[in-house]
Structures are given as C-alpha cells and as structure tokens.
Image 1 (cartoon, rainbow, N blue to C red):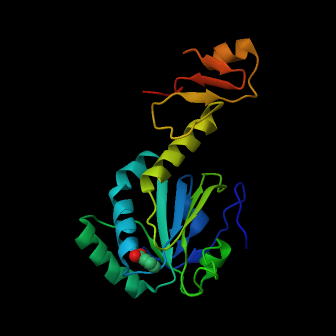
Image 2: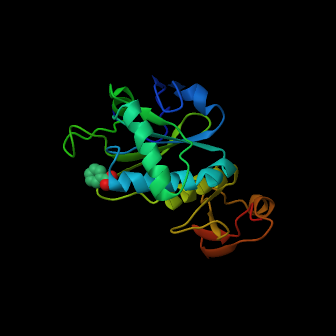
Image 3: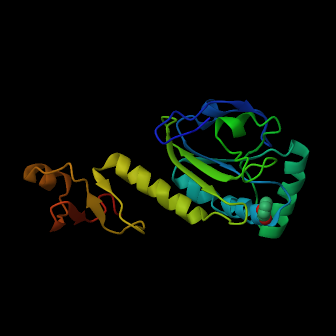
Length: 213
Ligand code: BEZ
C-alpha cells in the first residue's frame, strides 16, 4: 500500500515490548512518530533508538508518543534494549513493535524490496492527533536519521496548524516565519500579526514567530 500525506494513518494491533498496541487507541489525542529500522543488534539502529530515548522529554513537551518497529521478535527487542541502554547511556521507554508477520510494515510501506526483501527500510511517519499522516521520510540503511530534524518538523507543524504562517528553509524555534500568501487583506494582516510584518515581495512577507516566548 502507498501511504501519502493527508491519508488517515492505518490502524493496527501488534505486539510490542510494552504489550499489545492498538495503535489509534494508544495514540489517543497525542501526536505520534512511528519509525522502522532494518534490524536489532546493528550499529546505526542502536544509535538511533538511543538518541530517540534521550529525546523523551522533548517528545513529551510536544505531546508526542514514539513507537519503533522492526520485523525482529520480542525476545530480540528485549535483549537489544539492554544493549542500547548500556551503550547509549539512556533508558528506552517507548514501545518497539515486533512486526514478525509484517502486518504493520505492509500497511506503512516499510519494506522496499529493491533495497532489501528481508528487512524494513529506515522510514518515519509523523501522525497528528486527528490520525492524519503529516510527514513521511525514508532513509537508506547506511544513514542514521536526524531526530533533531524530526522535532523541528513537529514544531513547524504545531505552529502552522495554529497560525496562518509557514516556516522557511532551515527555520528553528524563535526565527521569523512567513505569512501565507492567501492573506491579502490589510486589516486581517494587522489583526493576525500584531507584532508587524515585512514585505520583501508581495508573496514573501516575514513576521516574528507568533507564539514566541
Ligand atoms: C545499522 O543499523 O547499522 C545497519 C543496518 C542495516 C544495514 C546497514 C547498517
């Protein structure tokens, strides 16, 4: 199945290191990141899951639940978590799905047979509280993902869901944002952006981040 932005994230029930997960029920009103890795007991995956564990507080601040997945079995995940905790100096406290029957991998298109027929690729899906797919990324097995970028995208999505703005290239929390071209009315601009705005071109207008603390 091909999953696209805006689709409803497929629901499933699968076993995990935290017991059986009924996905939509588990997410509740949280955001979710569901991410696959090629295999347990491999070096890049060990660093990725360790780094994700270190971001536990950052995900909690943003109301995000993380769930990892590979097609390894539960015993493998449980032994490997000990290695991750030991080597990455952290505590993995999010569930890892044991997708041995590939049910979830097929629903989320995590197996790319021309890359590998026997393992999942390094994919990550961000899901919003309405269960809509908001980001899909896929990396090759040899390249670990940048989880700070995942946080940055979540910040951008949460900001732009609440204000009529978008975030420019390489935007970071606190930087200026751009005003959606659909807002043209002067009184609406003044009401929505009381901190003011700069017109660089009629279609390129910047304003301070509206919810900047
Ligand atoms: C790794 O996690 O290190 C890895 C997994 C599969 C292929 C290459 C690297």
